[in-house]
Length: 349
Image (cartoon, rainbow, N blue to C red; front, side):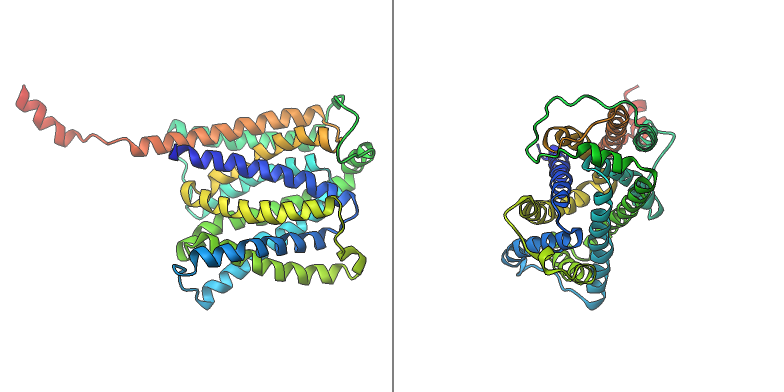
């Protein structure tokens, strides 16, 4: 059962992220400012995490040097604050499905970053290495299919949606205009690159500061301060800062408490157990969940290209996970040395 825990954790993480795509898009459609939204979600996560971090890890917390604090500050600024703010802008230009789809470039970005830092290895002569390479190419093919092939749109099964979007056709047309599409994809790619850097370097920082809960809480606290400065610089209208009893409040609470508060800790745990690429390669799961839920909840239209791209992404995911599982199995197998066994054979002969 312990061996299956990382796999269950990444499925839970990606399911939570699918909810983030849907609720964030619904909040932005409802008029909430994306920079203010990031500040509130980080503040909610900080309020939620800090008491737990202090209660459970205050006695065994490792020392925090000024140099390490600066590393965590920059790590939070690039990988959390900047990534979330840029992601929010790109989500305004696109739909939940399209934003989730373009985020599937993350496995490729993380894979190459991990290779450059020698945190991941590929033996192309072994079948496990070939499976990992094939998985990356399938993910790239899936992302390209989503970007360049739309195809016919599938007929929606229902016409009523809980987050009622009668403007799904308008959103789709906006997302598919050349100028908006390029801008949204470029911003999402930038956000994913920063997120990939955050995933890879988090493993390195955890070596110096192994307290995952305190590390997560500190990042959320620093990100709250950083995102407030950015939000106040871009949004001076006080009406945009008011929280109302609508989907914006639900999205803020969900993204702050569940997404940031829970998944950041789960991600740190998964990275420690399986490495950064294992976590990144589970990203296609969130797209598959989002593409299904966005049809019923937001009323977004699904194209044939999205379905084909999702199939390729899922194939790439399982190919890489199978390759990593094969490598771990081979590492655990005892190696038989001919030099030690041959004398015994000769004696029995």
